[in-house]
Length: 243
Image (cartoon, rainbow, N blue to C red; front, side, top):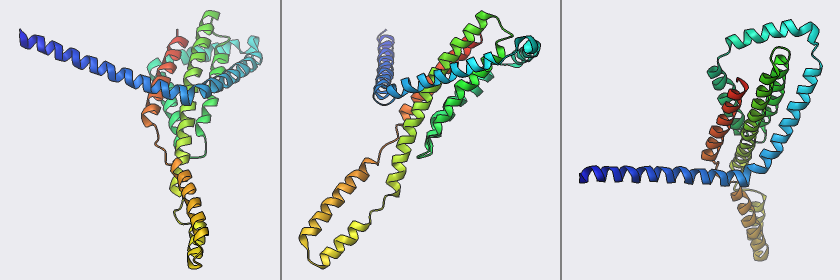
């Protein structure tokens, strides 16, 4: 009896430890999100929504319902028959989130901005379904797209943060230990000018401090969490869109 009780207690302790680790990791991520991503996320999300609704109105207003109704209906029905939601999730949601975030590996060039194409594509998809689906379906699709835009906006700002870190790391790796200040110091040493040697040393210290600020650690764990969360949001949006 004691052994069974001990096993149960050990199991509970392990479960509690795992729960505490998960909670701790989530707290770390939300702290990272609030300090580094939250403000940018809101701005990018609003811009993405503007792009989505502007192009949606343009696409819908340009549809000639009387002439294109049958063609759009046929194409939409073919697309729906051949569409597998699981393939769509893997290809369109998970892969897109991964691509947008880790495009930040390129320094200086903020490639995650390619995510702004996403709301344009979603607007085109809805416009293509406008003449073939009922209003209720279109409402669900639009709500799903708005949710997906929220997810892709999170992926974008995470990619921007990644790019900022890789840019600093690149600048740090390119900084040279030997420069003009070293030449000047050597010159003043030859002249036995101790006052100017001290000034050069102070300048070198300040320069090294600035360089060390560029030696940042890339928060890969936080980026991975962003990828998982943005993927989940995109999947939820896709499921709602396919109701």
